[in-house]
Image (cartoon, rainbow over all chains, first blue to last red; front, top):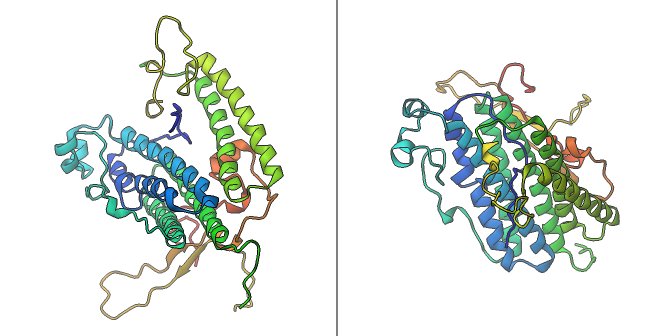
Length: 189
Length: 87
Length: 81
């Protein structure tokens, strides 16, 4: 089970009223390499991974849910006071006619989330390599969003999230070393 | 809740976020380095410190966590303090 | 191997090949990130840390992993050739 805490992992501040940025951020909300995909991927793989690395998958998955909450907060703040007119100008007319300003799990192009974005092969190497790739893809997505954004406060939070992808990638790489390890014996080729 | 929150709210919240961040970083590190004694003792130290900060925050601004004591005997305060996306 | 001494950068670049019929003016350099975790291997114990406040700001407790990113294509950004 989980115990909810009424706080974000990192403060989210937004300095400009810019619903277009909300549209871009949906990529990290309901997109293929977004935080929902990350959280569900690791949370689901943890059942069938060697015991030595279950904790890591569990704990990174938990952190991803807090990142999902940060992204949701950004989208919420960027759209909460926007008029239908402003949303149309931001390219969110299609979103508005279906959802008003409700958040929804779709990507920046409006494609709804699907479980096909994630994998669970049941092979520890295949799954951990997928996780490493997922972290690199999420890191790249944060870079491309930062490239598109001129909001200094938003970019500050996005840089935090990008840095977390680097740390997760590091830990998953260490997990690969742990599951490869043959009780301290080095294989000599 | 229409009232802006005092500066102190943000200050204390950020101290908690910083302490919890250290705790969380050490959790991930210890997941792959389970016998690093220096990291273990730092983890215990910051886990303790975070608890203290949260107790002080909750006494002033209401419950932060499910399971925290309700500060009033007449009204449930969990839903009357702002949510993370509202602050 | 270049004999020129350069400090390490986690921002790499290359110049995309130009064809005769490429319609857009050349972008110059294309950039990509190679963050520090790609070079460290299994993290050794006792690495230098940031203070808690600074760690939160930077998104990492350990200094070795810190990798600031800004739009490399913007004028005045940290993009380099």
